[in-house]
Image (cartoon, rainbow, N blue to C red; front, side, top):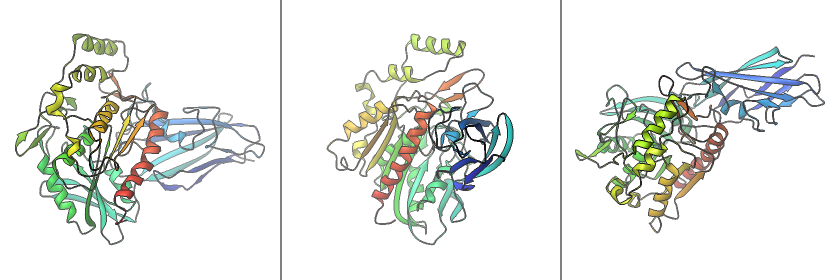
Length: 430
């Protein structure tokens, strides 16, 4: 009798739950599954979980492991608990394109490899069409259902890493939407950095998408982090959107970025005028504390800089995004443990400002106690390695907050709520 792996299905969408079993082993035997995959930068990520077989000599990954990179009974645990094999802190899993992810599973019994299988996880399949977009100044990637028809559309905005979130747009298109992963900096033909980006660029992209033959005229906006900030700013500026989803957003217009680092330059312009952004303020104590953590090889959090910057609320008013001017339902998502910036504080500020507005009863607010900055779609999915840390050069490591488990649980719950929110606000069309 030889123990083997059973996986159903072998080919699946990334958000599908798999059934992974060990069968044919001896009873009450410790068996271990090792999982491995690569991100877009070819960093290898690994996880493992050990189980004890029952009287029939079987075990299921949905049961609680006796050891592993996760200790909870969770059928997705092998995926979200993966860590970069070349980093003691797990490091950041990078995924932007819509290519499938192949995951190798290896079964060991008493330290000996007895079976192996490769599973493929997809963001879209043959029933979804992918199109490269370069219409005038609009650059991005469009996905829509293969079946001819007019669908509600979603624009997905990237964050401070630039480029386009193709994997997210592809997956959402499989749910019955036409989706545009819109780039606005960091790709050829667009600005190199997040600096002086004109809001009119997004207005033109919105007009183009409204008239696409696979769109019914309704446009929804979705963004995370800087993309969430942008989604709210666009909603407050243009009355073009059916609904807006912002995860880990800012309540204020934040300074621009050069080479991936915050810089004292404007992020956004409107009618060729720069928009006022928050001015960083920090104490000498804050900087010395961050330097000390770097020297001691401890994780660096940006939260203390924001604590200093946000102390005088009145001085920030000109940089505040007037969310009360948004004329569409909103879903705002935040992690209480966010260490990049205080997104839960931001969402609470916006929740207060949205009381008694026209859409106040339609708005939704999600707060996750044990989650950090990367807690939800479009940047996080429960079956991808959960991100907490990032090596940002040399021996400097940045923490985004939360835990792998906390971020994975938030990603799983918020994905369901995002789909429900979109369905509710596009109900006549789907």
